[in-house]
Length: 454
Image (cartoon, rainbow, N blue to C red):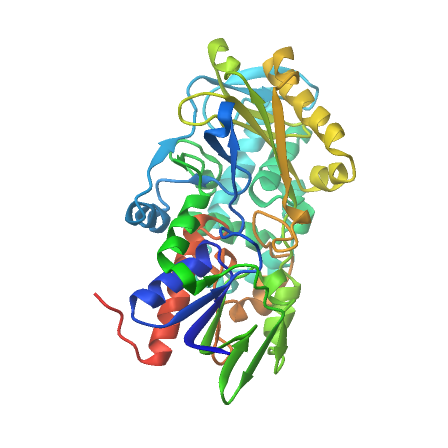
């Protein structure tokens, strides 16, 4: 047995942030990671001639109000660059007609449709303003909001088919599940935790504004490099025992444990003694979303010469949300499309060639026939990852927040919880992961009576 002060389970951004903070305070820390790599739901992939450019198969964006992860990136010597957004975007309506637009939301058709969407959007934002992300279960009418699905709210507040489908598509883009799977209170909380609904959807000024030079996995790689031998790969923790001699996780004994995993993975660990029923029941109610991230690679970003940004919003899909994902130098050209929710589930049953055809078919309708013939194609089905089981984050279904949400961050004896799903600011994003790791480390230090080093 290796004895240490704290053992951290999970070497994603949250776990490594917690370990970094604890180590910096003078505590002896070990990090156990089941994969053969660090980074969790971030993963770099080499593209281009000679493989000298990088795209991300997992999470990739940082926004201007994500202050914690941006500050961490600076500390780690990393730089950002803007997501390509110059030019007009493309919208494909539910009848297959394409048009160009600027801004976040396209013109959805007739003025009646735009008015319908705008009124629903206004009503939604008024609800968001009433939710405190620190304790969403205390929002006015929380139980009523939590028993309702987002799909039900959309049906009641949008009258036209196009407005309803546009709202549903934004839900898939943010949560990678169908609106029928989401508690309305969770959607409101999520928007409040980001500062507003538009902050989640926008590129410039929003969550998709910037990327990390060299790929987002570098955040974890740099932290792990500094921690050195404190990080053990290919070390899955299948059981945790808490006793008089401390906490035993894998072959490591410590005084305290930080579990930095999505709730659906944390609950697969066998705890002895068992977790409190409220915590266990909570974890049973936070499944992961389902997304397949797909990228078509071209010799150059040819759409830019046509005055297009590479960003698109397609109601027919199946790749409903599309971005120019080219590296900072502009070559190779990369179009990124997401298969999310129902489309991801359906197309996961197909083979890669069929998925490629479906995705590049969407690209061809949006950007012309040249988009149907990429030089390469890469994809990542995160639901098939045994140590992720989905992306982007865990989602709360009806009743979860008001029935069990108080247990989300509450320590269980010497066990503390981290992971972006436990964040109160930018839950589901890198910033939320950093916040959660720092909060868990602060809890451990307080419990151990350790004063952090200045």
